[in-house]
Length: 406
Image 1 (cartoon, rainbow, N blue to C red):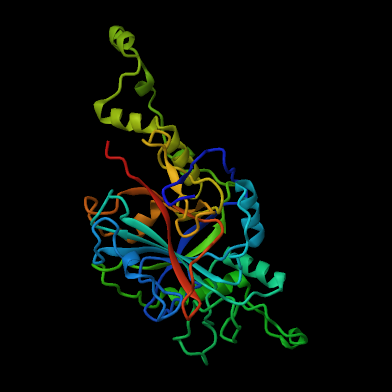
Image 2: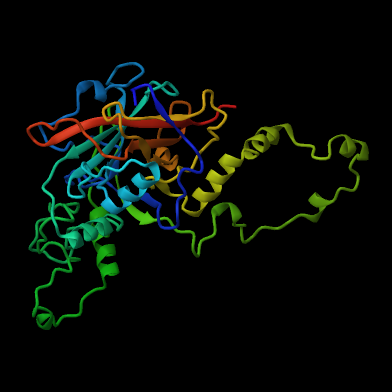
């Protein structure tokens, strides 16, 4: 396929199953002594590149609209290793089968940037996919364990009960590297050591709560908000609708219905015949907005987990903020020009709650205006030739659904 060819977006191409979607939530502000790594997922702040001297090309780090970099800020950095079985399943649906470039041991990171001065302009939001090649392992169990840990909340690597440890230990160290004694939640207990434990141990939940409390007391890292957003670490959970009631279905406990408000006695019958659903002009605009079935679905799904800032569903269906079928020409996802035999699939989307977290002190007239940001990536995970550090960067496709101004 040529660089100008596209793959059409169809609603029935992919069907997300229960358990396919993972949600990310804000965990904690980044503290001044936290040292983030490429295996951390966070919003705002400054990017952590795959190697100190391996950076993306300068043209990728500029707004695609104004070509400037002064207002080009990091929205999200997501550590996103691939699972071979999952990629293979998606590839079969698309008749694109090549796992040559899919290695679950590679470091794979998605970076999403936005130009705060080019609202609603094409290419003002860009996504960079970074890959650092690592040697493959044959231990499938270790790979599965790594994927499982990614779906768990970030563990704090500090022990608030150990006065022998320095308070500057990093609570966000690599969860897949070597364990040290400063981690009170490590399950890496050597054989025979359990018999030596005589003191009663706090539950993992209590330890985590205590450690988080200690971490929360630390000073938040300060950022120059003219150059970057403030930063928060994220944790990931599988999307769930069980035992939950969305906010829009909850009624206040002290709600009282005024029967007189429901009494139509005295209403002009002629008016009702002419306009049986007579709306207050102030609510007419809201009513038309709520008539949008796509937006209604968006609101209903998000209401079950209202604090989500990110949805991840590789090869699945995005949760649309607005209907894209009406777009002229019809919405199409461009195939990667650097890998013409492949195609892109939906991988993740940024949610509007992220705006509230990054811009809680920003004037509403000057803040970000997007409803959701959709990220599509090459299903073959291809990258051009890597540099001397085995690192390569490519740009992936971004579709922004802007907030309606109507």
